[in-house]
Picture 1 (cartoon, rainbow, N blue to C red):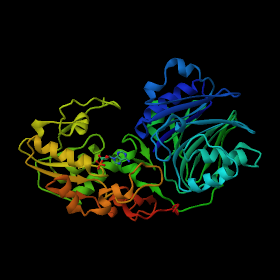
Picture 2: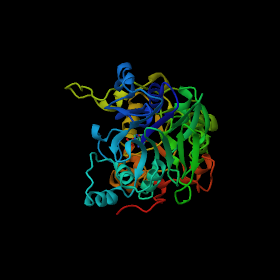
Picture 3: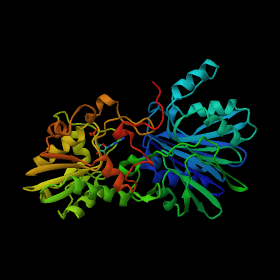
Picture 4: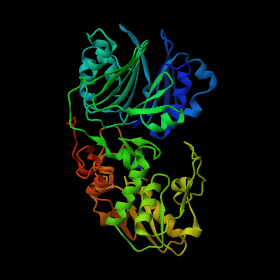
Length: 448
Ligand code: AMP
């Protein structure tokens, strides 16, 4: 998962990209990067870590120009290493080129092998680098033509931004897995993974890019085309469940409202007698509010999340029980003691966090703990840009709901149904969504 941002036609392109990336930080915390163009030369800064730690005023001053793209990264394909930090900036026969990618190419291994056999030397292990090699090899005589040529070799999820000395090109794959929106700030155009990035820089939201759209932004304005083969839609439903920020509008809907709906639907499908509804913050909060509203059970703060957990921490020699989760979440005893508690989270992946949370709630005096999950069991890995573990590590791939309840030590466990998820997300048949992580029905062929 990653966040991408691009701006064309603004004096402060790099500074605004920095802010845009800051708003997209939830989409990736491993590395951050910006490439800016002054119309002649493209300059880059990439580093491991958070946007606010990576970019200083001095660094941003070294990125002049009216156009810029940026990325925050969370590795799916390719390890967590500076060589995989984006945007990638290269020089080739057609000049300089930068690219930032959110998504995953499903045929990247095979195409990379072909490129390497043809003499290509790769500098990273990220799937994104394939595009650059295909662009360099393209016989098309425009930047747009080269980008389209390159994308025709690749399949999977891609919301991407490309930059050269005169154009910014934004593309969204024909299935439309990942979001990408277009906005306007005075005379500049802005593209971003989520509307929250537009809001921060006070850009006006214009529209979402369509699946399969190639949008060229240059001195002449906007030019949109649909050169990629048309495919049935497959918008990632997990963006609405977990990934996107709740204040964003994604796929035309308020993420917060969808998540509250998921909670309401969950309360209808998985009711229970209880005294209080609490959320696992932050991801479970909107659904918990919806659950409380629908069930009539009071919502309260039962867990407080620390927002200051660093990347490394020192554990005292005398080991503290559930240390990792305790650093992140602290129980509010006055909410929990003696109560029958419904605790709402958005998903269970391996089950290890849920188990620790349930134990923590009991240790704080909760009389009963009923775990409610605002999505169906996550039983299938994602190949489209969300970092999920292998199928073996997904607890729901090999355990029934009863077995998972036992493992996490909850008095009861209830998941939202797939039909309920689609209904609450506004498409009861789910035809416009990719729900492969819940259903195993992948909308593209997968590399074997
Ligand atoms: P686990 O202990 O593996 O079951 O972790 C479950 C928690 O991870 C839930 O609170 C989710 O909000 C969160 N989560 C779900 N998907 C992801 C993901 N792809 N990356 C990071 N966290 C996730």
